[in-house]
Image (tube, rainbow, N blue to C red; front, top):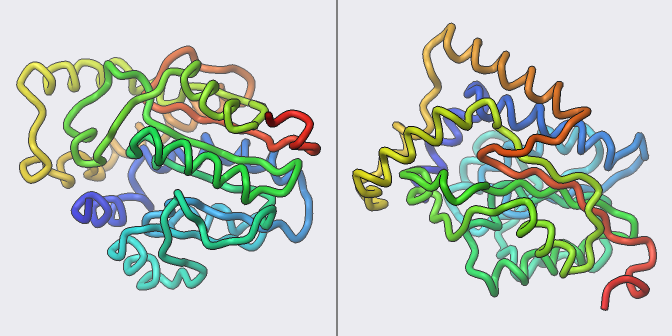
Length: 257
């Protein structure tokens, strides 16, 4: 995991995948923020804290993670509102945040911990607040990267919807993303599974998260941004990730049994 975090930290500013991710997430953030002032935002399992820059444009943003190396990298890059904590027991008061996010965290948790993490996000939100969740999608896309990220599961849209609704959330938007990458990813990861997935010690984070040379990276960035534009109006029926905007009801006790 340390190798993955360090490789991610080197790539997340420039790699087309991260640029695409931010383009996918931004409209949901804008919808959740809805030009409201004095928002408090929390990134649950923030890794290096890089996404606090995105969240911080809409209010006062905080993040926490369990990995020391991720937090160290974040602090080295000037991100100060970081804490060390588990997503299953978050050291913040109930109903303290307007928006909480979980980006590529839930899929690495065993079922019991995943349920606890979702329950904690629900608890942390003010009534009427929003959660934005991104997870790995489609079991057929399991590959070497799954080993590096300690992936427990990949979700279908119905599966993610059911898990969030079970916790009391109302789903506002749910779509696959990275549909434009689906064919090459499906082929490469099929070959990886046929070969046999590498062990964590043998899998290379650098190989999985390396910024392609220009102009390839620029072309791929453009393709991802076009997909993000399309996703403003339509839901994708497949893709390597699932992105969800979920709302805590204004009167949670009336809907959460």
